[in-house]
Length: 294
Image 1 (tube, helix red, strand yellow):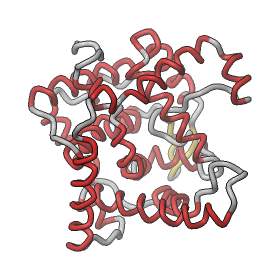
Image 2 (image 1 turned 45 degrees about the vertical axis):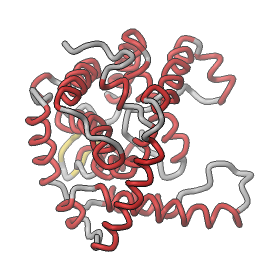
Image 3 (image 1 turned 60 degrees about the vertical axis):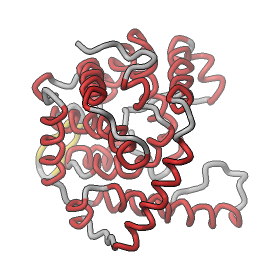
Image 4 (image 1 turned 135 degrees about the horizontal axis):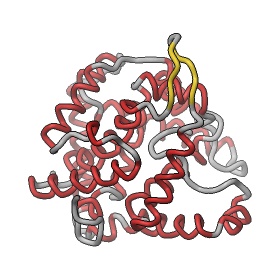
């Protein structure tokens, strides 16, 4: 058992860093590259019709199981597993389940990797001791979510070998193609936004998001997806990363994660007061399976 995720510990400082959003597209591509996750997205997701709500619900769920306290995380974990049990179907002639151990562990692994990559790209790489503490804490989160013990590599070095071996087996599929198309054609987040404002904003966000995906995906996988990357692109990314690093450096770790901690506490309260949530948003309840489009 690792130290609890409390103020000053590695997961507390890094998991909810506001810079993590810069790798949102990358992690989604890596998740839907898994064939079981891709099948689940195809059969059980409406993210293409309502991506903004799905994004907010995913963020709410992530905030709960990391920053919602032990009791909040336990309730969220039970809810997620119950929801995943309903996601079944047939892919390539075989039945699948969203609780397929390999797919379930892979989704968790991608979320574990994001904060480490964010610090490597846009901050200060974690020290060996920080990596040890962070990974141990995220393994505890994984166990709480129902990831099997044997699917949690024993240390960070073993985790990186597992992660690289998984990525080495992935290729483009219809789900990755649909994700790229959704990024390019995403509908406006609010109906009152005029088209003459939204269309240029959408083009800009698509260019930025697709650039960051190309920049941060593992190089060999990027090539297998047919995404080009040039020395000029690398220089542009290096300048962007340096600017983000310079901007974020003076901000204390507590402020970098404050939004996620606040969202986590708010959503724990919503779990205990579902009527208040329904009255606020007229929907069934916040949260969606972490890191997925469901």
